[in-house]
Length: 511
Image: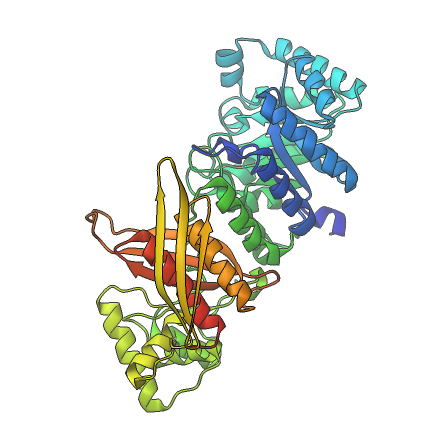
């Protein structure tokens, strides 16, 4: 097998098909930043950024992304979805400067006759006219066979006729879309093997959906059957159950087949977090590859096994994705879990103290309390009676915010026995607090990492006076290991202040 046919091209559809996720709408700035990351850092081959003729805002977004892509020499790697409308899509594209058209055509007789209410001959003629207009304008055309999966299962003769006719037009690639996510892996292999045999010179790509949770398996079968490209979305964004998830497809492809992609695995986590933040769609903690907990060992016996030779590690190593293995602290923790977390903190304890720390962690776990690595120094200080918080303490914090009121904050801190005060305003109560605190930290020449993520957790069904847990993730430029701090209080603002204070304790060596 040559290198050329063992390499699978990746088309990322997060910004187009992924935007069909309920409640997701990217601004042009977000689309541009995601596109930059996908092409420059993650190194996907191409990005489908929008649908033609959707809105004036989408038109401007495409123009801005195209301008950037030209300056980077990436113009031909920007694609948009367009329609069989003879000249309307082409004129829209000419206005934006984008020059790769993914033409949405009907891949099943059912869709053709019942949605378009046209005959195959009429549809093929419309495709021919649209493709001819695009080609005359210097636009490269690929075609989606929408609902191809049902088309092959229930109207194979139509699919063969379609490919026989449309392959004579100036079309570059043929996208086989499992639009409704109906195929099994065996059906994918059978159908694509058949088409590759019938049309060996055509470039086929597979576009899967995850309705049966089979998208990853279907992608693996598709490449084994002969497709040259796969369509994926970061975090599996997409309509209904979503598109084939980039993170899992690429990892499985690299580990379980002879095929390779250009994707840089270490950037997958960063891409996932970026899309998670911009889309507002939280991914589950146990989502493969990118979930918060997927590299976390909870049972103490697992930590012990890893300590004795990585006995519980699989080939999906966290370091591949710029992450590290975590050993959870809770009622299932063992001595090895404590030891590994202390090692990551650069701490060594006597066997007696370590045993007491383990007992306290198990006790907190039984109380359903969240315990993190950063909590260990506080537990140790409590056990040993040492006051580790003395050098930096937020004495008072008053935050004023509300409807029609500019949020303000007054902060007073004690640092090494001296008091410092500052006021601040912001876009919200916590922002005002951080601006006030920032003035004090600047005076003290103390730098803190950037706020990377902010999450508030309230117990389901809890009362208005229930405890609130605020989890803040901090990450500096170039840091591969973010710091996560937790604050707990019945007041959300105070919980966030406590989480921020804990960050200062960590940075100043009070832990």
